[in-house]
Image 1 (cartoon, helix red, strand yellow):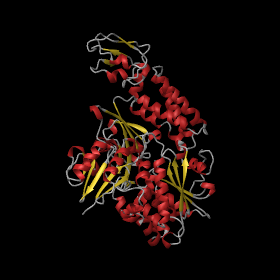
Image 2 (cartoon, one colour; image 1 turned 90 degrees about the horizontal axis):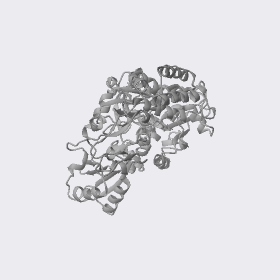
Image 3 (cartoon, helix red, strand yellow; image 1 turned 30 degrees about the horizontal axis):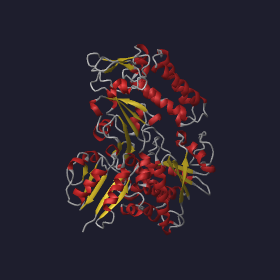
Image 4 (cartoon, one colour; image 1 turned 30 degrees about the vertical axis):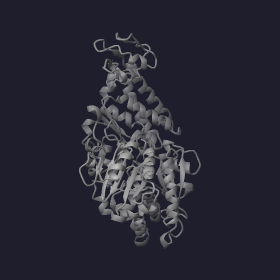
Length: 589
């Protein structure tokens, strides 16, 4: 008798959507049955359909979306026991057509090859899918320089944002002479809207550990550190379990695989400071100091943690390494275009139909990522902009949607690839408000060391606040551009040097929206509260009183079945009246 495997998505997104009760229900219904195994897996990337449950039976894999306890019971009764697929709830089906099959067909999964498929707390499942094969090949068949050359030949560039060639970075650390070296994984993912690294750590932690071990062998390091923000408790839990298992199996520790190479890893929990994503600030934090950047050179490859040569790669970069060593640089480099090879993982968020994770070949146009992979804009609204690279990136308009996803093409627009956060906006988004949000973020996250970053971003934010309140001037736009140049030139680290990017790109591509705020005293997106006014259409109002009963500040008056009126002096523009009005009588001007 073949065994049925039931996989429940229990990454952070699955748990937040209610995956816990679904898992408990399935476990209680199937506990004790020898023909069925119930297990937890990570995120397959379809966050918008969580909780997800996959049934693997007789070689057929069927994934159900938006599963609750009642549907879980029905899945057991009809699919597992009777072999009847509940077609109306199917998301993916490997043996027949299914609604989301094309979404996966448009992707190439290297980094996400195991997430959502294996139990992240079971090392045997990782090993069964080529796990630690790359490490064995590197240690037993290759010299450190051969490993470095393989990574150079693959064209892999750092996926943390800068895009520096990974193999070259390793080569610098390899050539540095010292009695001790460190290999660090940067898991301090801090961009708003980004969750790629968290998902990999939660769903496939061993791929990162293996990538670190291969890299440590290449540069000659004996100690590894994963710098992970403490806000990722599930990722840290899975990492700790993976570390225990890797040591038990001899993939970490002394004399790994009998080759004489020794390497171990420990976790350093960060406090969640965005600036600690910068290498030298991270090094200071690891050393127990305040996380603040220092001038370079010397670069970490020569003088890093406690003055010793240190290599730092982010989670996504490291998850690529085992696959490249196992399959060869040529297999990896066949994906991508120009100097951007391989794939890129994106966290798709904002005003899109299918939020979640996607891994696409480098070179895919932004339009295909947003409208094919991410399902386009909900409610038939118009696309307005996409923010790439988080607070360090920029907003790109519709006319640039045919830009291919590669480092050089994205950089040419004024944005950056970044770590992979992609926030999509529609016509209801105010560009000035977006610029204000990102600048507020970097202003708060600035370590304060550089006056241009500490004070300059504050002055830029004050200007944006004036504009959003209708008190801006044309001179303010010139001043924003002037401050942006000064902050870029006068800041020590990447946080300050890139902080003006969201403002500069919005000024470049959406200047007319700034001018609407300044000249017309209007917010085209009807977002900026001091520039909009709520009213009730007397032709539509039916006097149901719902708006008055739900107004948090009692700004609406009127009797039952009679016209209601909004007091503009009291109204806080929260939008609750629009939300509850059954006939669409509330308007915004």
